[in-house]
Length: 85
Image (cartoon, rainbow, N blue to C red; front, side, top):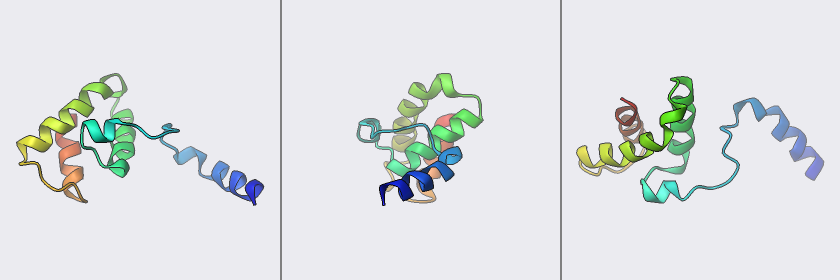
């Protein structure tokens, strides 16, 4: 069974975010786990990898500007987009 899942995981390797463990940043910056990896991927695609620590801080700031909204799709996406610009 283990061999099966290792092979399946290799099939999805191109889609991995590069984050191999959990991150306390999701609590510190109040970024939902799924949004965290999506935001990380988006920032890389936008050439903002070097600004990742700042983007995480800006996510928390953007959330407060928007009224500390519940972070569910699509509101978490809006907060993430605002944090990157």
